[in-house]
Length: 425
Image (cartoon, rainbow, N blue to C red; front, side, top):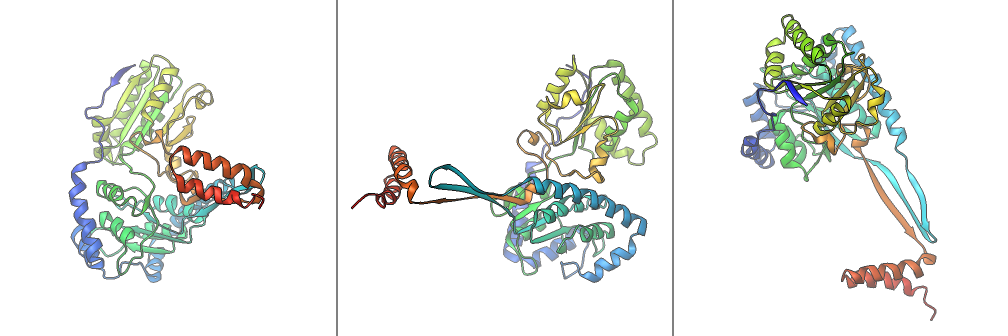
């Protein structure tokens, strides 16, 4: 392979320098509870509210502030996401009874997490789509207490009305106006106003990611998310305008987002660069998207489509698009990606908003070992077993031998005592 356009900077890894600052915030919230949360709301967001939980009156005001056509759009997106999550849930079945040998009955239950927090970033945009992507699968899984939190709009006491409305439409039970590392601490340790949860999911800035890392164990998390990514495999049949549009859609997330094209066609690579320059001229987010493309964007020339597939599997991108003459033929050989978009009409942006799959996905190569948020994120597969007397002659002697082989005599005796029940007096 060769680089037609190389990145100017290396990958934007989550910054370790936030570690000590985040530790201080976590400890402050653990010790001082709500007082610390209110202080951080004032310090970081200019928020003066005393009650962190959003009231039904605030939600009603948010609904009145959002135009009815936009409410309809958010509801349509929610319906697609919910339908897919419910369909996924139906594929995860209980196993009530399985017998590997006489007298032994095994099984598992599919148990929802009891309580979870959906962290919805504020950032520079109201990311109401993330509220849908997190809370709807949790509800479809059967989580009994789904809470959500988000930073307020800077200088106000309120979460953006579209985000608040999306949380309500997703079925969130409790909503809190708090963000940042302090929110992760609050839902991990609990405060006077906030009851802790069992699982925290959702993306955030470097402080949020570091807080999730440090709180993991005290609370469950989905994964540590880094800058957003897209990798597009394209051959000479691809439309350079569509490829460029998809790259810029990714790059406008932030200055450290990463867009990559792997192509077998050098002339296509040149056309993509021309299209990027042209489309940037008429893009109102050009400052961010252009900086991201200049610093982290790349175009790679692969010797063959098979090499392009190898590169994609090595990179394990968050989003993987296929724009080739025979996209379906490539699918079987691809195994490292957060979400796959097959064909030129399957733009990554559709998955971001409304097609129904989830947009909260692994980054920084984590797709090698995990998938994204889905209904299964909120489910536990918990096994059970029942052994009766008829299993004892074989099972007790087998376990006794295995345990003594490891030097664990008490284990062996616990098995042997069961076997004695079957020994004639």
